[in-house]
Image 1 (cartoon, helix red, strand yellow):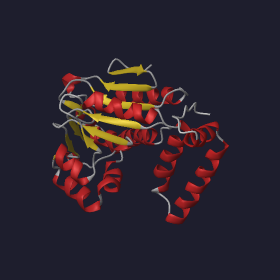
Image 2: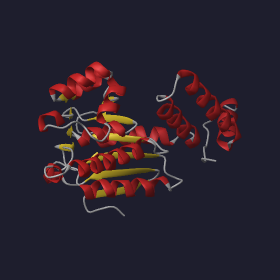
Image 3: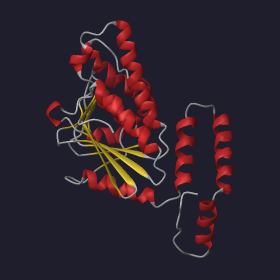
Image 4: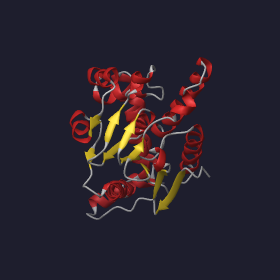
Length: 260
């Protein structure tokens, strides 16, 4: 499964995916995008999976973005296909049924930043840097960055970052809501694993429903979003985990969720 440029491992109910081209700052080649899509497809079929951590190998970069040498000679129709392929991967990550946590260990530029934006939660090393510098190359972000960044931090801030092609450090990223938290120095992966394990203890179907309610709901009107929420809420009352959760609360004990 996947590629030599991507390493996947399971640690109990958590999967860790590492982009593995540290000498190239984990730049995303066409092969890597295809392999990542294959990996996420495979992981989604693993019913005992509770969370995924996506990170980069080495300590310099999460991913410096798309392999520029692959872009330089593209014709317009070929470039459209590249954009659609990257968007499809980011959509796949966003729609994954378990939380995907980006552990950003350095540079997240261009397509690498867009990959992080597709993840549900983002934890960054103190040295992490974020940018969508495509305007410096005569293009724009093509993997969903123009849409997701504005939705995360607001249109004005997103446009400022993209129009200037400027880099945002970890502290600013936290301040503007681009990331959820900054990891303890030297403890990025362990902090991400701790968060993943916290989530893994909760009811899997409720977690899935939360993800669906939010990711679908932000595209709907408030009325439609509330209807979706009510539908998902009601559906959980047919699960064993809901019965276990409420029973454990009343019995003052820790629930044991089985995902059924």
